[in-house]
Length: 191
Length: 191
DNA sequence: CGTTTGCTTGAATTCTGTCAAAGCAGGTGG
DNA sequence: CCACCTGCTTTGACAGAATTCAAGCAAACG
Image (cartoon, rainbow over all chains, first blue to last red; front, side):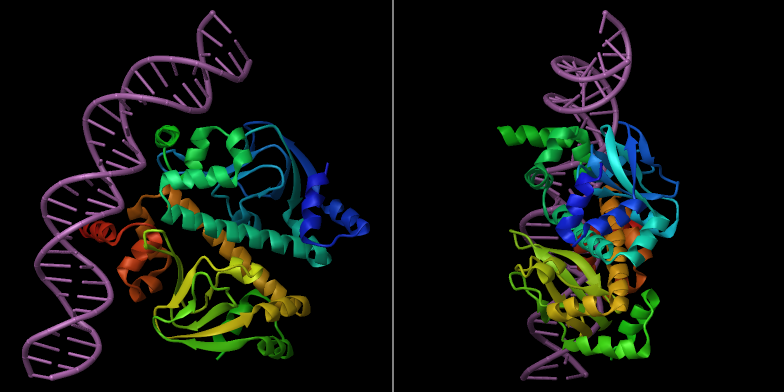
């Protein structure tokens, strides 16, 4: 049940078997079915979720009711509204499942305790956040300096697994273009 | 010389006077004049810089030679090509000074040692990266869900100090539009 | 088998980019 | 003190690209 989680953990930080059991004590498993919400805008995010199996997305909804996908999460990824989780403020993002999914989740209190108690956990989370920050910076750059077509090509090169599992209108949303536009880009590309 | 740095530090982590002296031993001061590079694309980023005084920007240059500003940094901000700094790979960003500036910098080796040696430093940096990550996520959201005009309004509301110190064509670059477009947006706004 | 969901296509519209030129400080040197 | 750069902003005309609105179609779902 925690296979992928600790696999990911051990790639970033040392972890003895005893310490793994301690960490496991702070985690729990949550199953969520397709189309169910893990988090709704306005609620406080109670957990950081790690995807053991399945697919989720986080997205915001603008004043016209359009969805804007912030992030996808497949196996091995974390997903949360980190700001809401850390501050206790209402979330600005929604998170829901695109497939039936299994998550490893941690609550705020467990997160705080574990950060104090476990050096390994500290190291692991530190690395995760750092990588996530770097990935976001790349995304900003690509969003500001590439055309939609270039962004799409870069996306399918970077996340080939995601492309196959996710409807194209959601990829369009992630890339910041309309579904019709992405469809036309794809047509131009095959010609 | 390190006033702002430790002021920022103490807002995020406890720091005794003795520990401050230890941390100070790992830092150094660097002055940089307007238009000088702190980092050039292709070189390895040797430092993370904290701005004590002045203004810097990081930016990428696309294949057509257009600059795309990733980040501004004024007093109290960090700036670096974190990916290059941590991996030793060539930087994809340029960093230069928009005004004569004073920086507090740390090298990679000092960074690694200090993270191992000082719990306070760990905590401080952990908080900084977390905040930076959250800020970037907001920027992605705003970039994908707001019109250029809304993005500009949001920018001047969020960073009023920056607006006054920086040429408008650079704000346009940060927002991902051409200088002409920003000029027209501003004209529409005053009417 | 009817309904929903996602993808595609077309035509009209709106917005941004491009190119070129002009105006406007601020700074420099004669 | 003035003429002349230089960097920055503004404006106009035009081309190009994405959005909007509407419709059609195929596959998946219950």
